[in-house]
Length: 442
Image: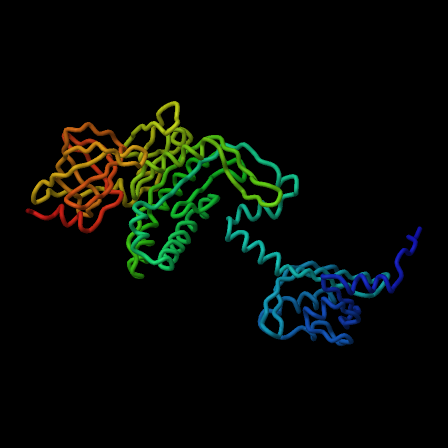
């Protein structure tokens, strides 16, 4: 039984002419019979344009595929769906979804409907740049119900931060600082993308990354640790660019912790972001705060989730602020066939100073300098001036942060370990003048 006619031809013409999608009708030999306003705007057709539809498409580089789609549909008299590019006479690029339907039994007319995907692709690309490709895909493919949902997943959180960045930033103009940071972020996030990490956000000079958030990934701890090693191994290339462009070398510390976290879209119905919250995130930040430049620290929780052979140089424990128990952390120098090429765990070349340097130092309490100062003597230094050996009667613990004074110079360092009667310290910030004073034989 035929359906009753509910729209007049005039009404149908009005609807089609008002559509955002481009609509064309051609005969079975490709003769253009009709085009709505959207099609005329897209292709530059005249209102009474005739001739083969492919002849009306500009013969410029990039349009070969679109022209061939039209010809194939006419020759084969069969439906066609294709995503292809189109370049107009002004050189503007469009991304199109072309759908051609040929009903030879009833109408002997080919109907062409073209969706302009250019803005959608631009939006997807912009969203991916401001979040990550994984989050962009998640947001664009989610229903409204999915957008409101959050999930509890077992994940690994990676926190990376530049060491001594406050001193570095004070020596650069805002424009120089942004240029240097953008290059660093671009280089390092390309590594993170290769390991399927999701960058939740940039925190000043830091990076907050989650592994295993988009879907359950049983290997997230191994992947996060392997990624951290490759991130550190990428820093020489970052610094090579820095030196070529007049910027100082950068050092990055990385901390990883694994455990349950709540992931999903967090916020209000007016403004949301893909986020990751929970104690696992907080502890990851605490682990990262224990690192020095070039180091990868993982928690015991992460270590227990890694089935591969892992090589560590040091094992320490610390009590996080507000924590109920100590957290054991491992300084990683290898995972399977991946090895840390340089940084805090590399082989160090030590040499004695011309003369021992007496210094005073204070033990920091949660990054605050205490009023109590102690005496010590710096006896040796590494060739790269990053590490020193300190003799003192004051008992020190690994991972403690110190503020050291020599003459009028103040620098900051972290206690790495104890070697015989000396403490090995790593500078987290040091001035050229302080290094010069160390080497002064007087």
